[in-house]
Length: 252
Image (tube, rainbow, N blue to C red; front, side, top):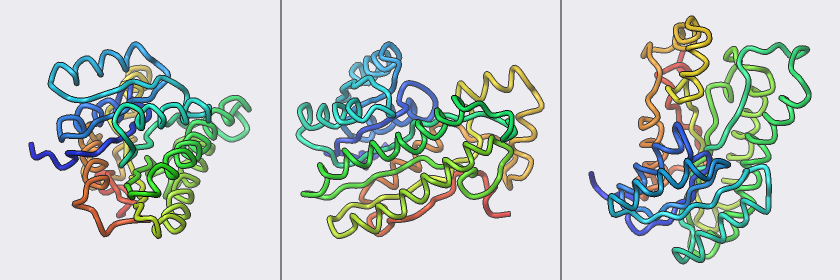
């Protein structure tokens, strides 16, 4: 594997499982120093131990992305441990599946908007000032639910639309500082949470991929590779974009 991310320090949220964990391992293998953020410190430490055993550089900054102070501390960890922050993969997310608006609890609505929207906002708010002097690249995880109604809960659809809005507006505001900001339009991905949902309701898998050109779920590493490419200098003329990693779902 080429070290396309060599010399970069990258913060990854939602890094304890699924796409975030795949990104942690992949980015480190491509030469990046990584700072891992999620609520589950024990899981982060397990992944960090794997990365260190493979010769990679990693720090853990456990915390909740809805907590602005915790995000600020994670960014500070990157600066103190590795001298700065060159990239970020703001991947933490949460939502419900197929819950009607009138059946969605206030707590679920607040958590969905908090993790996806406020979490992305908190990350941008603290990451961008550090990148303003030397530039950088940010990737935010949106979803096919950010483009159209997917069958996910309406709160999740609204939240992922908001992530695209934040991405585009921030890209326009910070391009003058040499910062690129993009989003991934992620289709159904075989994460631990999705696997759990499928075990509880097996027809979910077939329904999730029914409208895709490629009728299967993504593997977490496939999404992580797309994020790595966007963060890398190989994507140097791409900003404000919404890049689909969805098996063609958003094309038809």
